[in-house]
Length: 177
Ligand SMILES: Cc1cc2nc3c(=O)[nH]c(=O)nc-3n(C[C@H](O)[C@H](O)[C@H](O)COP(=O)(O)O)c2cc1C
Image (cartoon, rainbow, N blue to C red):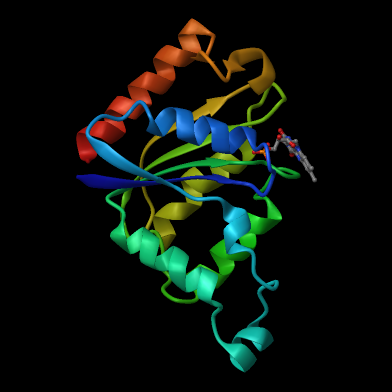
């Protein structure tokens, strides 16, 4: 069965992005989903000097192996000050030192959500522009605004228009797997 790597790009214990990523991935059919928590990939802050002294830490090597083994990726990006969360940026920097094309051209559904009305659109638009230069193959994307108003743990996305749009994006990913 095809394997889908799923994570929220966040370190929050109750990450709304992790919830959204899992919700989207569980709409896929006939796939095995592998959910990871970025807290298990915490490492010293990247520095070129640290890399020279001690090499690339094991969690980045493991993340790279998981990317290689995945057939597709579902990720939802937390937005901190218009950009990535620190835990994701650190993992991104370390892993990119193994290979610049770090995303392995695996089909990706890129998501973002936040409590605010913009739904993490700043970080998502950066991802949509930039990942293509790092082996990214984003085939579908979706931003969920005002998470607390539009999502429930039991029902998923409660706004019909937004739910239809997410399902459309999930179907696009499904076709590539
Ligand atoms: C340091 C910090 C900066 C933030 N900056 C933004 C921001 O720029 N835009 C936004 O929509 N939300 C921002 N937020 C709110 C986050 O979207 C919110 O904490 C959200 O729950 C993060 O996603 P997570 O639950 O998956 O970690 C920020 C939160 C923190 C702690």
